[in-house]
Image 1 (cartoon, rainbow, N blue to C red):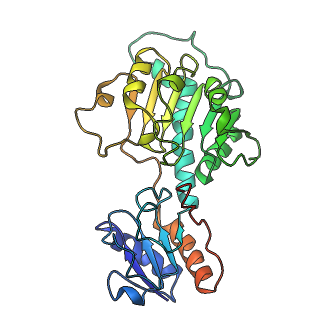
Image 2 (cartoon, rainbow, N blue to C red):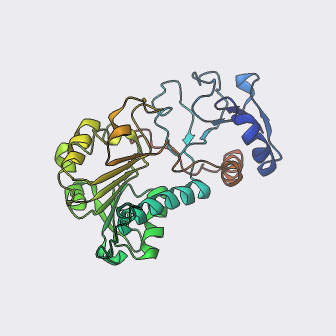
Length: 302
């Protein structure tokens, strides 16, 4: 099979060896006659913006879990698969768990200033409710790691599908889920339905002292409403890894707000060593006439 690779500058050297090792029967290249390719491996930043010439491509395989930068492309008529990568899931679960534990244990209380603060003992994890917005592959990985520690986890899911060990609520019960969230983790995709979802009214539903952790999409939160909510202590702190504009401008108020921690979109990364076998499996399925895994629903946008 002949496969076109289209991604940011520098990605070829990182990805080509792993992809070729996982799929040795593939001819992988960065250019050539568009009509001659059986599939495209794609990530934002590549040189393909018009998919029309790739009329024989049976699959566009994204290297990203989020597909908001491509799903609205009117020239894209081929099947599109998002990335579901065990390394990506593990990385996201570790990031969210690390910050959830920092919030839970109150690690920031213990300034090294000579003051003995032994009267501030945190509760055990089973007394600290966590809400995870978005129960796709990433949300389930995060919920699984947190429940293993002992946190009671409530998930909010558009599908409403049951997840072992997690109380799953529909989107219609979002207000209820927010009201119980001492730690709120946002992992929803960027769609018209989720943009600005956490506005002033919904942020006010969080318990006093709650923490908000957003490694999902920057468009989920109304930035101005969040800054005002933080000034009122609800939430008490926000850990933000994704933003409406990236890199986050140096003069943005998030950088200087004492109740905000900015991380530079590093919560989870698609790793070639774990993602290449996923790509190989999907391409083999398509070439064998089987349906691809993790196909994107164009109407939902994910």
